[in-house]
Image (cartoon, rainbow, N blue to C red; front, side, top):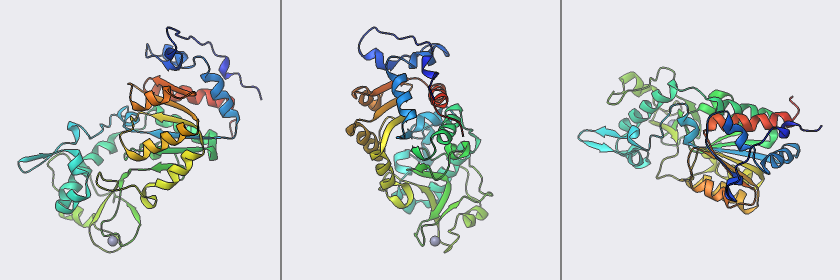
Length: 313
Ligand SMILES: [Zn+2]
């Protein structure tokens, strides 16, 4: 089957060597054609028609387009008594041991924000991308907001490497079971206490002891059991095309994934509204690209290219 999708009119800005591989922001609609500059269409075509693997690495940027803040800034500040705590203090095992109810209240406040959010066009395009690529597809996400799963990506193909705040597990590790938060647990506003009923609902269903949010905290390490650590690195080693979406590489595992793909000279495309360490890294690769654009604009376009190359099932 001959692919015709890459015969779309292409406008290139050739004001310098780097601009050939860096799409510029501009009026919506125009931007999409800008992305398809120079050799990228041919590379995407060759990739789509191969049997090689694609990995998507997502971070806070894609969720921000669904109005979920990073919670690393002021949205995540939390007042206990007369002291204000920062997210880097709240999201720790150490804080959970000292003030478990406050940590739960903070997560239930975040839960309330996430429950109101809906997947955006980038999330939906990634669902379709999973369907198109099937066993060639893996989604590695740093986001704990459940939006990829809500959109329709499968749990099997989605590695939630920082956990998911819609789930809890035993704080005493009586088992490695992971449970959805009970439906009667409500999202909180800042300062709102847990009810006695909620305190009971937040106990481990297996042993009755305290449960904890199913998330990776700042003072904890990645592992395979909860966070797909080894699986992510294994997939990275097999990845021909890495699509980085809305993350700038501030955490360890995503960095390892990106460097693994760079080291075996895979294709790296970074989609981000601003320059960041990953965009610079991508542009340092022989087959690396930086699309300076919102994910909800850029990802559906990339999907469109792939969809025209691949037979729909
Ligand atoms: Zn337990």
